[in-house]
Image (cartoon, rainbow, N blue to C red; front, side, top):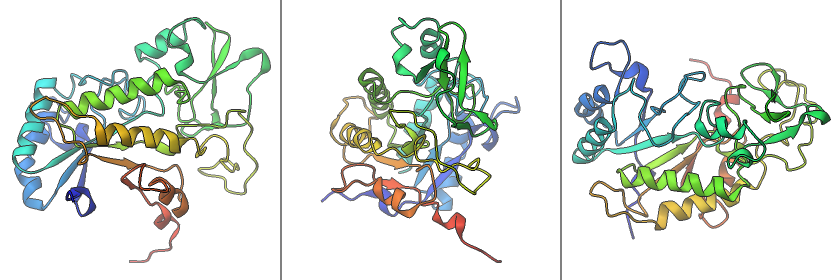
Length: 303
């Protein structure tokens, strides 16, 4: 039986911008991370979780991605990344990337195309509602404290963005969108990435009927709403199973490629429920390998 390295691994999260600046421009970079691998190894770290370093307008600290297959020049080049992966592997360190797949940047070419016309090839990759019907429900944008539905004049529609208006949300029920993301995962697996931390993973699917959330007595961060319909719709289980299949069965002949069966998928549930976290594993251990458990945030702690 294969040894599952991630079961006992120590993961170390790195936010590239502030970790280590290698060239004096005031911005941390991939070369800065590479220069600290010996130190991280000495600390006892087994795996690096690197927050987004992809091209981004930085409206949400890099979690608004404009290209899922490239490196933002502020952080270096693809050659820098390959050098980082190679040296990490030589030291026995695993590398896990943030996959922000609930939404893109509004400057991603997909959304620029999608918002230009209802007939655009990418239009149905995102979630829309006709303008003439008004905003379809009471869902809120988490970081803007207002409606999550944002007007797009070109198509006379509202698009969904439950974080900011700069982060339009994907329609994960669209098979072309799903296939594109699985191909993105394979691209990075082929470069040697050992897995992904899936940002707000249980928010991928929303209520198909776009029903309003019922009231709640919790103000912040829930806006007096119980988030029954804009988060944690059970259809995410099918997506997780497909992602697990990609992680476990797809091989690559590239020299640094990670091995199927040794890749890890780590989900960030959208909430603090222990049951929600547990559900991410699937009934037959056929979904995610790990899931964050945020239940501790409700506990009273005293130093």
